[in-house]
Length: 172
Image: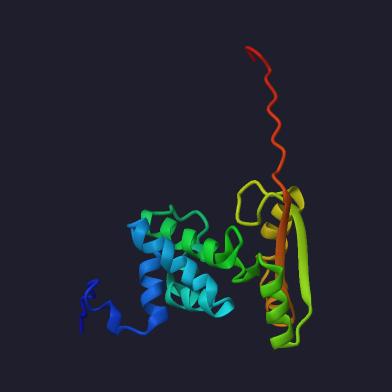
């Protein structure tokens, strides 16, 4: 059975599933508001996105040499924006960037807040060295990410932009 979905009949689909489809749209006027709304759902918004694209995520985890096509780039862009972390497809962690929202989530869940203060943003390729290390080694580890997801409300805030140094060696 093949069901074609057009923008006219998307409204009949469950609201979060509709947002998930729009979040990876090629049209930024559709994807940006959908990503923002999914982020407003907190971890549940990220989970909906990860569940919908579980096969694609699994494929890229199993075969890291797999060349990213345009759809995968849109999927990871949406995942990273909703989660608040670069390469979040590896960890599935949701990071609050608003401390008040994190405090509300902590009160509701009974979990403590794990809060990071860093140079740059956790969503950027070039965040501070520690956060890049944590992202690639700790957060991507299934056991570590499971503990973080299950036992903590995660929060980060940027202190200032990452300093960038350029060294010019002249003619080489």
